[in-house]
Image 1 (cartoon, rainbow, N blue to C red):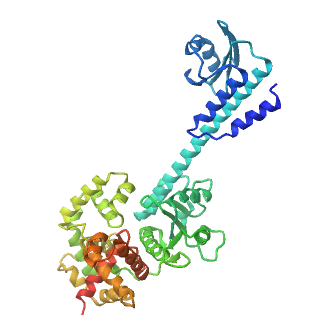
Image 2: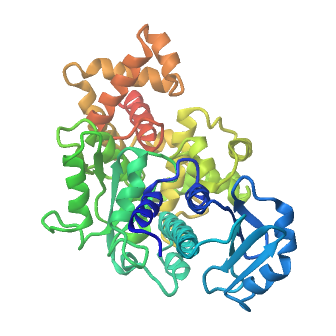
Image 3: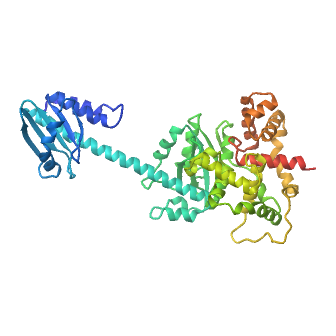
Length: 492
């Protein structure tokens, strides 16, 4: 039998971590065995190919062992000893699953009993390491599959399709889909922390208890958590909501935005709310903020007239392919690179579809005013329940300016911009207006105002805090700013 000191050295070999890949732990073990027994070692895989060997093993020698290796691999024998010229050869099959790998030991002299036992121990450990590696690979594939399924559920909810989400998860429906309402918690954290947080709270089904956490497919430093409202009440200890708040308290690089309570079918609305809340949270001492926004502008406009205008505005757009409409809608909320990542397409493809949408609408979608107008039309039609025919065909089509001159719209705009008219916020107001006029280009804004680009971005961050809207990168918050400026400029 191997001596205790030899077995101790074998354990030390196992503890050494590979530095350049998973195969190095096996190769180091094979080389170590060769030095210990003064022999050349080879590991032959399940199909008879040399997977790795010590440096001086002659390939021709193994070719002459092919019949014996075949019988060992097929399970007809467990071990075999033979000679090749003056060399002594010992072969041992590893594991139980047929076909089996084979460990080959070639030495100039017959091996002592202790050396044979050590070789057998190393062979068993090689197979254990190989099994562990297969288990690690299976675990990785499981985690990747679970992450893709969670993301698919989230995307189905973002499109307002809870039923589709249930159909995608037949046999393993997440408890979240049994809730009537949810909140979106949007955690900003270092990208590398997201996987650790998700896996720490993942259960055996691949979900997170009654909640659901996903890596944001657009922003690398965002983690999205969907929690049913009966699960995330402020006083409920031990919940994911409490855990996220604790993470923020313990790390100054974290921030958390929380949406209002919404039905599952309006998850996209809750996500936008959480983005706005996160923009505010980054400027608050506790770095946690809930959404306390006012009703959206689209819901305040006269219903019949607004629907008539929106349908007329979108009519040329409806003839575009569905993918073009989907990409254009996403591009109103995310940068083009983010849309490309979200749909797994190239940025050039996104640009081509947006160009097609521009041609159909006769609008420049690089202009924040055109983007805001399109977003308003889509928001108005999204408020229409299926089968609703509120907007009569014979009604004259109003202009968007007439819709925005209503008392409710003017009140909304004045309330929205009021924080920018207080004290030192006037400089922020001027910068924000110039930024819109410069098509949200910070460099052009800085040049037009005679200030640095860093000052522009600092003032935009201040505007986010004051308006409680996310402005960087451009998205729904910018649309609100555009409409508010447009309304107040034309209001009495």
